Amino acid sequence: MRIAIVGSGKMGKAVAELAEKRGHSIHTVVKGVENAGGRALTHERLAGADVAIEFTRPDAVVHNLERLIELGIPTVSGTTGWTDALPRITGMVELRRAALLHAANFSIGMHLFFRAAQELARCFRGRGEFAVSIHEEHHAAKLDAPSGTALLLQQRLWAEEPGRRFPITSVREGTTTGTHTLTYDGPHETVSLSHVARSRQVFAAGALAAAEWLPGRTGVYTFEEMLFGEST
Ligand SMILES: NC(=O)c1ccc[n+]([C@@H]2O[C@H](COP(=O)([O-])OP(=O)(O)OC[C@H]3O[C@@H](n4cnc5c(N)ncnc54)[C@H](OP(=O)(O)O)[C@@H]3O)[C@@H](O)[C@H]2O)c1
Image (cartoon, rainbow, N blue to C red):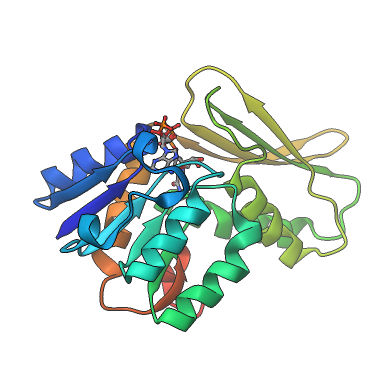
């Protein structure tokens, strides 16, 4: 496949490196400095690309998606912090019969963790003596807090126990790739479930798998729908 990489930060570089190892070619790399408001995403620049993989910033992603949808390039986006714009972007994708797969977290282990967390929430439903919390830690350069993954986890837990608070605490320091922990803390005992991403390769591999899956489809998909079927 010929892949357009939009955003050449830590994730864009990790995806490009892995894509070449897997025999794909990098059609173009669109950098932040040339692409204010998505202006570098032109028909000429993208012509011949089979798919775009977008990892940029919360303030850039929506312009990029708008341009890529208009150009009809199937797009995988891992940028976080833009869920408010999702309904509008979904409307655009449907109108244009375009294709978008987005995920706040491209790790398979994390999506299995969500399922285990929901099971835990079912077990602890109604047990008010346990204080429940979500804690997430990421490297100091991560811009959004709470993480998109923590917000997704919170939604999944609300689905199991709607009336309960699932407060999130966030730490931004050092170079840690990403840790999420769900804790039920009782008066004399603690139960916790953690997911630790040891390297960003895990996200690059997931995004690339999504880019291999998306072309030929239309509509808006999540990584979870790709992994477990479109009805999840
Ligand atoms: N879904 C997942 O599994 C997953 C995993 C890791 C990270 N993320 C998310 O992915 C995003 C990127 O993470 P990262 O670690 O790669 O961040 P990063 O290292 O800070 O890189 C962001 C890059 O985006 C570029 N950029 C900004 N505006 C742009 C634009 N309009 N067009 C093209 N490029 C633009 C920046 O370029 P300049 O510096 O030149 O502006 C920078 O190189 C974040 O939102 C992060 O939370 C998601």
